Length: 547
Ligand SMILES: *Cc1c(COP(=O)(O)O)cnc(C)c1O
Ligand SMILES: [Zn+2]
Image (cartoon, rainbow, N blue to C red; front, side, top):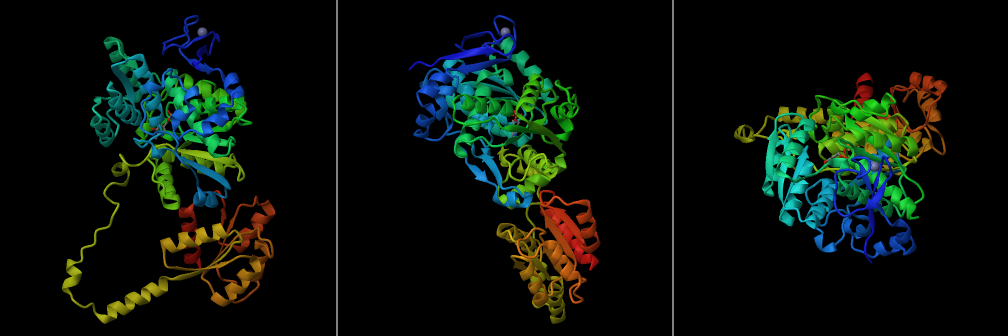
């Protein structure tokens, strides 16, 4: 069956046959055009059932991608990435359905592999020999790899701020890498001028059909992986906004195909040093003011002028819900460490921005504990880890001096042992959620000499406290038998235990009275969703030093 693809102008809605990429609407000159497929006949012929039998990967959605001949597909197994439950992070945030779309697993380590596969395939179909891209790093790397496979020469214009390791990665594939001293927005202009002079195709971001269409496949996969369901939220770190625009289009097509019921809200997270979309969103504006000089170390996200991409996302957010948040570089680096240490995933700082934004949105109650949330882990640390970790990733121990002294004086050894004993702190955790309790215990043990005892309820907790005589008690408030408030009252009424510091961790919304009552009795109050392990540890250190 021949494929039928049309383009529709987003301004005048003129619709015409799609043959190959064109620059503008022939009627009104609009530069943003949208690909339209015959969804009705795909629906009738059971497309949703058909694709289930196909191998994983982006090209299983071939009918909804802008290519006419399968022979032109340039693929390296992109797409088909796992949707992983973020078990530990979820417990920590008090969220039940938190998932991570692991886009680090693309052939070049970021979700730009989707874009490169579709865009380079389309270039091959057009018979292009050379192409031009402007990039903040990952597009250059992904396009360079796929262009190499297709035998297309790539000119990659990158800002001089892109980490050297990333430039080298693009160059490995034989791309011509041109460093532009200036911002990313200026780099785009230089790249476009170069392409015009040489008469070459230039990748045009959201104006490129192939690029937007490629990002739809994220939505297709997420819905399928959730059992043909849309999540409540799709959250992503955003630079130019291609991801959310494509993903939103993908979910809408699935609704039209009758495969899912709704379109998710979109969470856009930007780096505070370059957050034109967030600023406009928070000011309630439909148009974003460009940031002239981005001030962020996270160059991947340094698109200062989002142009019309913002308007498209703004429209989506108003119709289907969503939110935009900014995070500092520091918050992103912290999120990077938290994600790696909690759930074993090392992401590049640009991807960590999404997680730092998630933490803020959960904390602010914008994302609810029962929401089904998918966060895009958009890129791997691999080319940039040195930039972030420096050379401090391992500790050197020089044993030569110690070895010469043969035996350490016994006195020293004994007092050293003594000191270790001193630093052991007994902690009783009273928590009915076994996962949460286990995780708290794990965090404590990983960070110090804590002897951890876990009680599954209030009554058991009191008994355990009597037996163990802990230095610290951590308790939940909502428990089936004796609740946290009663536990605290009982501890405070017991002269043997009244001085033991108490930390309360709860997901409960507290009334003013409850909060006052707790403040008089306990040392630290942590709202689930508002604390991460650093905060918890600080709370413990404070509690113990006060006792
Ligand atoms: C490109 C990129 C982004 C931003 O994506 P857009 O949807 O184009 O704004 C986020 N994270 C990583 C790792 C990227 O490479
Ligand atoms: Zn038009």
